[in-house]
Length: 245
Ligand SMILES: Nc1ncnc2c1ncn2[C@@H]1O[C@H](COP(=O)(O)OP(=O)(O)OP(=O)(O)O)[C@@H](O)[C@H]1O
Ligand SMILES: [Mg+2]
Image (tube, rainbow, N blue to C red):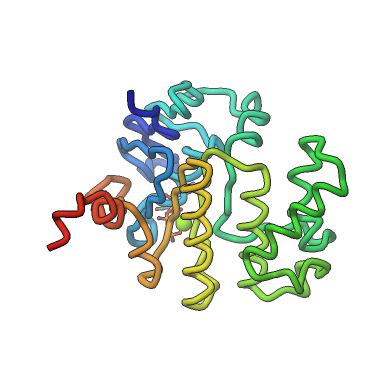
């Protein structure tokens, strides 16, 4: 029997009222993310990418449609998202379009906080946070406050923070936007490792052409709709050997 998808989005839309007009930020989108998949969401500015992540991350309710995480219905129109706070914290790692670090905590404290909220002892939380920061090449910056980190360094702290609670689903909004090509690929490769090792599902919104070959699949949005899907890496990897020639 095949594993249940980590994330299923069923016919989700999100409409915002703007005076008399209604903005259809998302307009009937359906897709699944399976365990071990790293999927890119592409599309022009304003096409609904961030809205889609907010809905999938249970940070906003859909106007229509349902969100399932591991076959459990977790969000539908009118859902009380506050009651899902614990579920969200345990299951979802979110990297926001802006790093959103807590300004008076150092890099390592920002990452460790996620674990301490879950009652991990402070010492163990700090050790694991330092380890995660090492995996985004920030071992030498663990004691810096966000104001003493570059934009790209802050973004990498935000990536480490999103991974701290070992989430089944990682949602990242332009996590490589402030990074150079090599660091950008490192971040997506780290997502890849987590997807492979822990069977997590990862969804990455990106405009960055330098990382697109690292996705298993890409989904393209335009005006709140899915206008295209491309299977990339996973298809190549799963080809039987005799197809190589
Ligand atoms: N809270 C809101 N109220 C009203 N309209 C909104 C709101 N949030 C988003 N929108 C609108 O919904 C549309 C989709 O926005 P969204 O932020 O999802 O786009 P995006 O694809 O992430 O764009 P970008 O690449 O610029 O980040 C846009 O037209 C935006 O103006
Ligand atoms: Mg956006």
